[in-house]
Length: 284
Image (tube, rainbow, N blue to C red; front, side, top):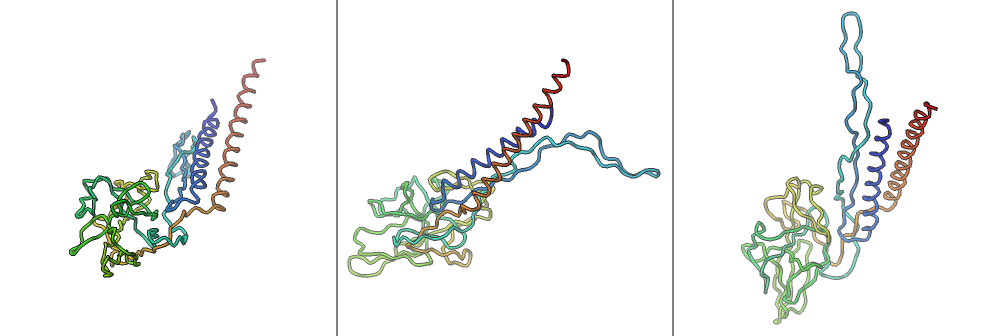
């Protein structure tokens, strides 16, 4: 069989995978906190028909002769660039300006607030989607009911953030500090939003529901940081959401490229099939 036929098949499969990734990007163009994905290809091993030879006293060197055997998926990377901010005027909608991710946990007893959370012993996820709510106990949670982790108390401990039912109002500062007015009209601090830092956020694993999970290659920092701290200069914007970083014009261009690549690879298979047919017809 012709090697070109198998090369064309590999090219078709890779183009289909690229179309799958592009389709998912476009489907999430309005998803808060979504980070687009990008496919990188690499060539497969080549079949060496003759090896390279070095120069001798009487003859120059000769390069190797190799025939490629197609392409394969090199990587499907998540691009963690900043998405644009959409103003919602909802004080519990948080957008992060800069690096870092919100920390969300489940498996804690947060009735009235859970303090000194051991993140190693609970289910922990990370997200850039900052659309939060208050549950019936006054804890700040996301749409799936996962608790937002912050710093509470002095000295600060990793905890859920609780706003009492008796609070008259609350506000969020750019450094993530959440203040509320209690029943007596005094200002109290509910806590400060904590952010996780990753040296390689592209190494995070998507878990659905706008959530990411840590992986051995993500480079999670050993501790959480407060916004606008010396270790993490990111700030929190209340009343806004970070939307998807998908650029439709770029995705449509990549879609055309993937479609043409798919068509070209089908032409390779068609041409290879015609050559095989000619070989079979030689017997007539």
